[in-house]
Image 1 (cartoon, one colour):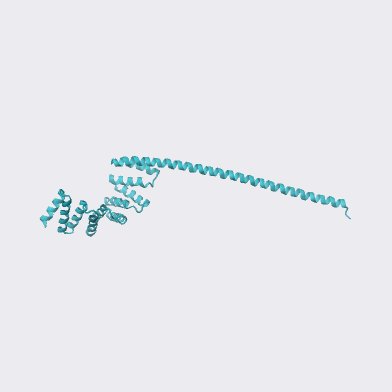
Image 2: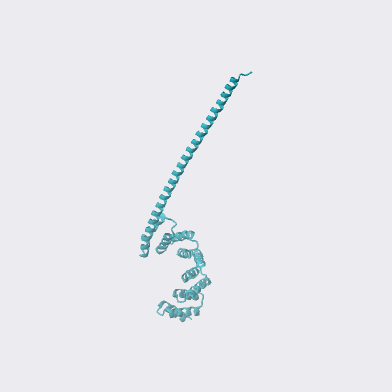
Length: 255
């Protein structure tokens, strides 16, 4: 028979083992929780630092953007002054500097394109207005200016397409119909030219350029009577137009 004191000792030993194990487990859990708290604290610090870096980065980017925009506007103002004075080379240099900071600036590109048209640099003007049409695909003026650049490079088919695109977007400018009519004359499409000049005259009935172009087409179509009527109408508007007087006199002699 096992002695009671042995049972008690054994029980006490087992209890001690469980106590120490439980105490160890509790200590391990406390250590784990402390570790996890420290990890969360460190993670929070890292997030805080990252947020700070992000804020600083955004602040720096904003500062650089504001500075860049200010420089672009300065270049643009100076370029506009030179453009107004017809100082094309000076305007071009400033606009290129503006575009180096903001390559898709539509105003800078537009003025640069117009500068190239005034300089007779048709190829560069073509490139600029093609770029502008990527940025503003429904801007009729860009198509009109592109048509002019094509026309002066003898790219008449492309000029016709450009002017027609401009007129589809805005058909209320007589000058565009005149430009299209001139293209039709170059490609010897007298019907297209006649239609274009008639539309220009309907928009601006006292526009002597439109009327003179219309009279010229009537002459080319062997319609002298119609041509003379148009020339007489021009003289009603502009009685001292010597060129028209000469053309009218020549037609009357021949017919």
